[in-house]
Structures are given as C-alpha cells and as structure tokens.
Image (cartoon, rainbow, N blue to C red):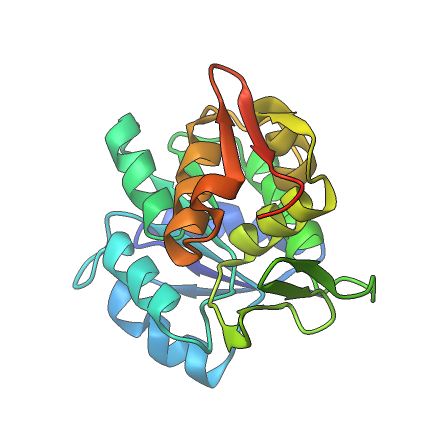
Length: 226
C-alpha cells in the first residue's frame, strides 16, 4: 500500500481525490496548507505527493523547490495540481522538480492512473546491475547516481530518464518514445516536459552537455561514449 500526501486547500477536491485513491488501494493523508508539508514528510515520509500550486501561506512551487533541496525527500515523486493551465506555469513546476502536472478541472480516474504509473516507475527496481557511462555510475539497487564518486541528487523522474538513456545509448529516441517508456503514459501536457528534464540532467552533470545530442524536431541520442 502506497502512502499518498494530498496538499489541497479545497476540501471538496481533496475528498474526491482521497476517495478515488483509497479505492485504488492507497493510503491517503491531506494537508490544506503548504506550510506543513516539509515537517509532515520528515515525520511521516510519503511515496508520492499531490501538490496544489495555489496554497495558503506557502505556494506549491516553493514547497516543491524546498523538497528537491532536501536530500531526505528529493526523490519523492510530485504531481502538481493546479487551476493554472498556462504553459509557463507548467514549465515552472517541471523546472522546480515536479514529475507531472495536472490541470483543474481534471478526471479523478486519470489522476489515479497517473499516480499508479508514476509509482510503478519510481518504486525501487529489482537488482539489474550497476550501469556506467564514463565517470557516471548508476546504481539501481540504491537508486543512486555518482560522478567521479560524488553523489548527484536527482529527482525520481530524472533518475529514470538517465537510466533509460544509458541503457539505450547510441539510439535516436523520440520525445514521444521517452514519454511512453519513462513517464509510462501519453502525457497530455506535451513533449516539452522531456526537454525540461534533459536540460536539468545536463545542468546537474555537465559531461552530459555534449553527450546528450539533440536531434532537431525529433528527440535525443546519448552518444555511445561521453
């Protein structure tokens, strides 16, 4: 049973989410304000957070940024939930580390499906052996990435994307393929999310800057060797 923390100030929306997620077998807790999220996660870690953008006291973008800056919760998947549908808001959430973005009004069934897909892909994988790419070492058992022995903090989605790229090095991968195989469903927010995550990988690990080659109007390819 996965533990889901729903951070939503609208009681009716929060209750609707709770009903659908509990029906799917998850344990759900709710907070109505962004101020209590970090203390709650430190006291009771969650497997996934559904985070409203417009929250009293502390908004969702600040909460997401704070989570990604804390090693204890940096890997917790985050689905951003908001009434804002502008692309700029979606990109802002993704750039701060959100794994997904759902715009109100939304289908609770679709949200539940996205939760399930994200949990499947961010749960600790079975041992598949350590992957190496130049100075980068990916340890699926520990869900850890190091560069020259120094650990690099990645979000859950960044880890899975890097792992996929290394496993398929030398192949040209379309954005749609990456969404299907890494995100696990047809992402209605568009393929821009792939670009955001690729940019964050390049920023966190500079040696990937040239190794991840952009294939114009198509996707990306990780060079056989860095």
